[in-house]
Length: 70
Image (tube, rainbow, N blue to C red):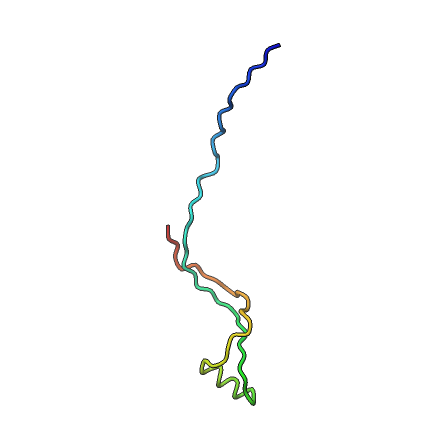
């Protein structure tokens, strides 16, 4: 009994070719900031002036896609 090996043609790719797109997004995030102060009122004032430092990055609350580029 003779056996013949046949080359199989590749099946056509049914999924479309994927491309990479870049987006500009506006992200709202809750961050924890720390400042040294003598009272909560003083801490609020210092933080409102932009003083202090970020303790933890926080979690994303909302995002909105502004534009998508090819």
